Length: 193
Picture 1 (cartoon, rainbow, N blue to C red):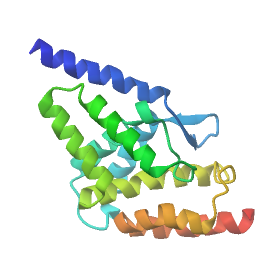
Picture 2: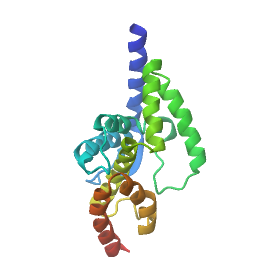
Picture 3: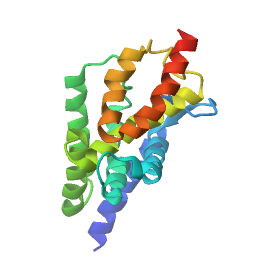
Picture 4: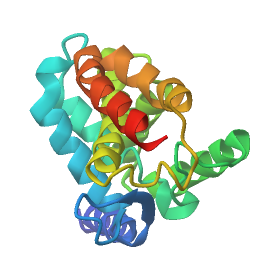
């Protein structure tokens, strides 16, 4: 039992590094950039609150687990903003290696279960993963809207780019949420471009 607890604690101590991994998104009060630990918590809360808007019925416990685990790889890979410029294939390889290393800290049964949830989120083929992926895209949009565009000007984000990189995923998992956001997004771009 002691070895199991030691392995679990090693994983949890490693996960603390998410608090030091800064993201592109700023807090709604614009005081600083959020970290990956904050992001993971916040989107888990978004999912809990907004689950009724999922395109299909979801198991919210599974969705929350995916969202708590989905960015764990950023400990090694760092944040790669959706509107950033990076090699997607190279980043996928880095994230796969990070997932193997970090989940590998856990006892084998938990490592396999958590890795399976992470893989399911990445593939976005199940109803739970599709909704989780959509909520992962919603929170940064809200932050950008609340901060007068936030990082959109920094990344030269266009309405077309926002729709193709964010809107399509949100529409797939939570169309009502995207419809509610679309008018806000359109109004921001109308006023600021």
